[in-house]
Length: 140
Image (cartoon, rainbow, N blue to C red; front, top):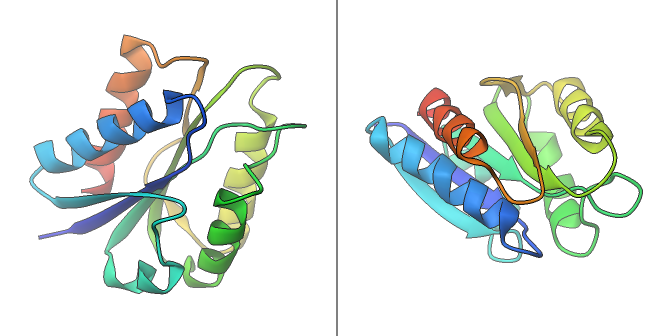
C-alpha cells in the first residue's frame, strides 16, 4: 500500500481545507495517508513515505510562509530528487506567481509532480476541493 504524507501550513483555514481534501482523495484511492501541519512534520521522516503533498498559501510578496513552512520545506528539498509529490495552496492577491516559482524549484530539486499544482483564490470552491481530491488520487 502506498504511504502518503500531506504537510501544510494554513493561517485562515483555506489551505487546511485543501489538505483535508487531498487526504480524502488519498484514502479514497486506497492508500494510507497522514496529515501534518508544518510545525508537526519532521523532515527527516520524508523518506518513510512513498509520495508527499505540500500545501502552503501565498504570503507577503507571493512567497511561501516563512515562519514555519519554508524552513521545514527547505530541509525536505534535498530529499525530493526522484520523489513523486503534489503542491497546493490558496492565495488572496496576485496571480499565483508563488506557486509557479515553487513548482519550478521542486522540479530543479528533481521532484516528479503527480499533476499540476492546485491553487485557489481565498476559500476553496467545490471545483478546487475536487481538484485536491484528484491530487490525492494521483499521489495514491
